[in-house]
Length: 274
Image: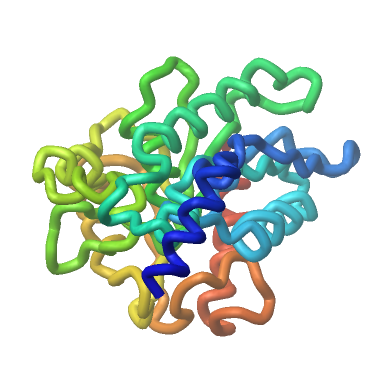
């Protein structure tokens, strides 16, 4: 096993492009002209800040939004990547870390604002939607945004929220975001714990999760809901009993109960600016 790891290390070092994640980029899924609502959403797939579920939580979500007249832009943001784990991530500290993924979503929002006319986007209806760790990034697009290009609404779906509450923290996402050594830094943990950074000027939030989620404890969303309520932030929180995790916009994953979130979202977004 040690010899195999050494051979793999030598090969990867000789092919260094494998040591870093692919360059972040956004892929547009534009609504048909006749159906275009002017709404644009940056879609952030989940994957514990270590990989990206592009099929279910990226492309699948984007095509569903597109079918509803919503312009979707799937974000391939920086993550730790698989090679970091293969090389002994805990020791070498290899892999992309915060704030790279935050920079990616900030740049995606900038891109949408700058190209709003060509994409027929209403700049008052630009938002971010994300799943699991992507839900955490979705909220950071407003709570931690360092630019003037802010989302007008955010939609974290079964999101990772806390990085500091040991009862509910999702350890893989924390390690993926902060890296091996910073994950033990209490200041860094607090800095990325969303429940501690909600302010009254947060845009409207659409929040969904399931009690039977086996991956990210459902209390993450309850912490976020409580923080939003305490700061009088307009939001809709739907907690389903069944559905688990990772269902995205799928018509087969999850349960019939949790798949209703899509209808709820379309109704919510349709009424948001009325």
